[in-house]
Length: 245
Image (cartoon, rainbow, N blue to C red; front, side, top):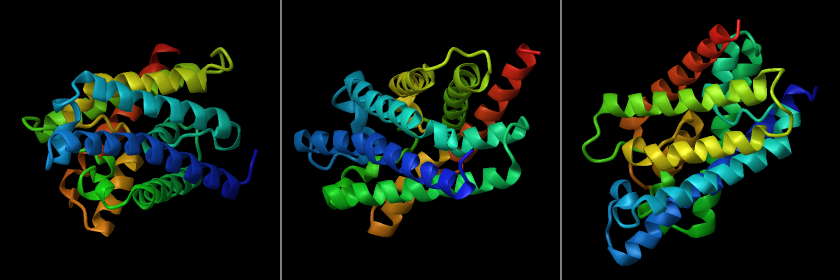
């Protein structure tokens, strides 16, 4: 097994790539939409102009980068790339508490770096128009509804992770593809509810970068993306274990 330092580096790299390409795709979608409707607020433009095709494109961007990161880095760190996954594995006694804390810090750092690098690549329009792909509840969606959507989406993601990556009886070689497509599918279906984060780090990166660069201040929504994903992942892990014992 690689040292904890090397595994944390892999988590930083993988989560940074996830945010750069995945959240970046959401920001680019909003920037394209702004050319059609100048001044479109970043939290309602996705889907409002491009319909479900917007979410298909964003979902596929996430699916591809997650699959690639899992295949590239999974042998080093396990490619958690998500605090909810690390916490669920710790809760079911599959991952040490000390490593869990180190992984979460690494994922948050990687997400922030990925978002800042995207802003550096694209310019301030990515912040002021695209919000760096930040996730927020959409108009008409309440706080509780957003938490529920994040809970359900992450429940499915973690259930798939348990079946295809954690279970020793899982067929080898398919984890990256299946997990990536699961994330893509959840985003396509639930993106227009609360942004389909499924990942506290994925939301943290754009939030902190927006805040640092003078973009929207969205921290009031951050608990949604802590509570929903973490509870969803933990519940799924325990449900999977219950059904397989």
